[in-house]
Image 1 (cartoon, helix red, strand yellow):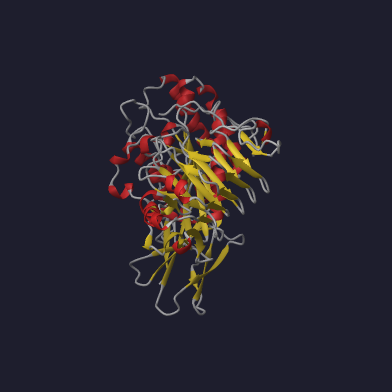
Image 2: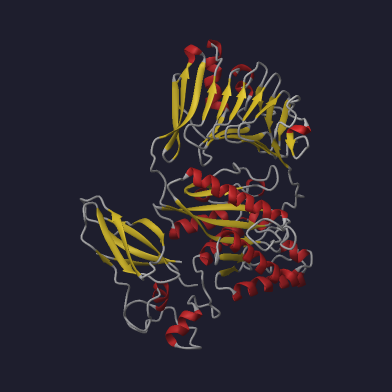
Length: 618
């Protein structure tokens, strides 16, 4: 495969899916405001812990008994309130979540009410998410003090400036336990799910949780009060662009690679790459779900990894920059099929879509919505998708239909997320001998045929990647290799390359003539010092010494204008240096100019000598 980056210088788990109901509080029985009364919900049924519940704007729901949110959610929308009265008790387990949105309130007012974490349940985990709202706690001793412990996964996540937890009723004797609770037991998350480490004194503390934001705790113990508020400190934070890649499939995308088999470098979070995933079954991944976090292993089976770790790292190394951040969204389900679970409905809606495809879209849409909140100054776009799936279809004798099903699925994804969206398919491996051989071959052939017929679809060969002893799932080294290949192939698209020399067949025929494919990538027919691989990367004429006319205008203040000739289906990057040795990539994913000539002002420090170079990528 030809190198796709060129620089120019100047000066497993097969769990059965269960689908929650979506209920909205409508206070249909004002005389009976009981939380469990079916008449108070639309549709007319009582809520369960696996349901997705909504209390809408201007509505006030009261909870006077214990309610455990397991895999479901409670969404308090703009201006809505939920008040825990008498023995009201919200409990979270198995990643249950409570969201309090703009001007919404979760009030714990009466003695005996508390937020509970099911402290006797080892699986306790979940998040109270503030998104423009507040949690008001008037009985500290019987509420917040009961939340969380050093081993729980309970957290409070702050999404917008002004999000606040107000605590009152802290007696003098309770001040030390209160501070200890913050330091050792409660988990506070910033925008990207980082765990907050508090610093400060008994009179307050603060910590940065996201670019441009910090959490501030202000204590007024003389009056028994304390508040935690998200404060914005830089309104212009964030990169210019965030480019998003989607990951979907079944168990080999979900991942059974063991994190312990990675180097310490690969085990460490990579803050420069954003990662979001939703685990399809309780207790699978070990990371915070449904929140943007730094890329790291842990989202796979038993805290393992799929292809995302190397896929994201390679993309960051090759095309990430100071002003362009890579972001990944992953949803995969072990044992899921394309012909049923991921079946496409044929349009940009979820109507007619299979259950796992619906969950995938819900995960992506929620992730994009949150990302826009987290980075309001950034341009966000989806740039591609990788797909590792097919085992279930082979096992269920769906090989003959797989090519049609995959084509239809890709078309549906593009209708939903963008025409000509680059799509890379991981081909099943010859080593997956746990699958029926005839059906395995049919799925492999179908995957290859889909990629061969669409220049915006790439194929990753996995035959030489190592597997676990089950001869079905890729091990740690296999996932490292797969993620690397996914990234490398993604950066070649679009491409038609039947001879496998890394040069696009159409590009070769446009310059050398019909049938003249298979040119030597290292050749230099025009003797201009650029080999054919470089000529193809820049889309220049390999038979004429032409170049791209890279120039820099004299600096004006602290800005310099860079200009060069661009080409279709290419993107560009800018790097700078003050010594021609150490280079910093400042911009990437610069789209080509419609007129073919591109000018870009670049900020300088206005004093020291600086050098610039441009690069090209796909």
